[in-house]
Length: 255
Ligand code: 9WO
Image (cartoon, rainbow, N blue to C red; front, side, top):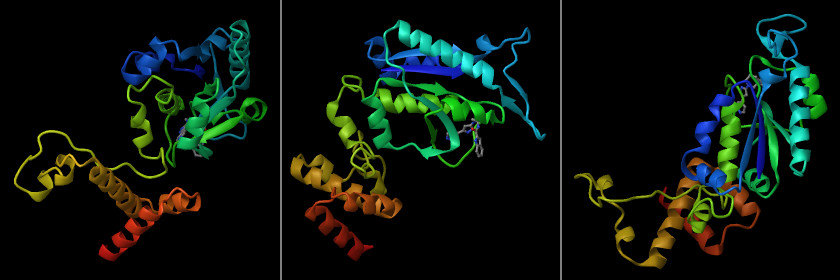
């Protein structure tokens, strides 16, 4: 898995390579991150990478040519490493919403070139010529594409084999089966005097089948309450069992 990141702020990335499960992906050699500081690809003495927008208005636009020179350098480095040319992804609120199925597909791919926008945006001609996919994390505006790039790499790298120690832990994640995750508890089993201060007794019972049933019911209840759209999607793709449907019916009786 190889990521090439074109950015004005490469210094935002190294910490990500030194902590947690993402560190494991890099240390084991399963993942590689190449940073391409955009300012290195400016062509004038002022290292200019932005200019005013045609048509006027506030804010600056990222110039096409430094971005193209950076992308040419990425392609040369990939060729020199005998690595496949990877698709170019841009992060923008106008993109398609990133989803766990898209993350899973990327985790099974050779990687991507991540272009991080700054200022008011990128000259449209770079997007038209070179960008394969625009991705959004949601309906909000950031000051740059770097945090979305880090978020995407985090989501992808944790799926690489051997990066999370516990194989089962991503099958249980929110979204890995299209439902929200169940609540989690650890010690102490009693935190205070209120009923909510106690760990649900079933989790202390040692009855694995009952615990699994309780967790599935909590997943279904939470998802039906917070994200009914996900229940519909799971139903439409045949991911709800007869027992799940029975559970949802009884939740409706009690709600
Ligand atoms: C910003 C923007 C705002 C409203 C409608 C469309 C838009 N496109 C962009 C854009 O591409 N901006 C560039 C990247 C330059 C400014 C900072 N950028 C950015 C990316 N801000 N917010 C994002 C982003 C990316 C993914 N998910 C949420 C926000």
